[in-house]
Amino acid sequence: MLTVVFKLASECFGIPVEQVKEVVKLSVTRPLPQAPSFVDGIIALRGHSVAVMDLARRLNIARGDLQGKDRKVLIVRVEQKILGLIVDDVMSVLEVEQKAIDAAARVVNGSWQGKAVAGIAHSGGKEIILLDLKNLLNPEENQALEKVKR
Image (cartoon, rainbow, N blue to C red; front, side, top):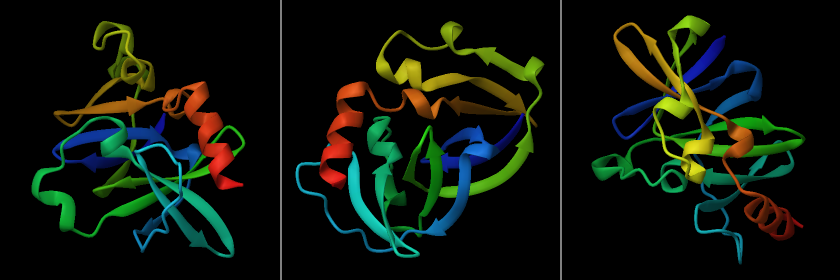
């Protein structure tokens, strides 16, 4: 599986390359009133407004001193939605073999964060947490995001 690998704080994460439309530098976001706390706001991208989620905040990962650095936005397609994910850095695109992936059920609990983890890949001596973007938001959060974007 071809995977885009990125960093949040000191951890490496990955998502399937086919879900990533592009990577852009984080620009100023406009706030979205009544949006969930992990939604940073919206950005303008070639004439379209894209909701941007702070992925570290969503996954409850402390950033520490990385807060001020130039961060990136992964523009992703989740089912029929386009969404921006703020990450600290985009590292590479790797081919991850299926046999190098531990099933998520063995490594995380049953919380919503656990459902967002598809597995743990082992590549080049690193562990990469593979995310399932479809499970990043629960149905209520998905609905709330849709309402504020209108």
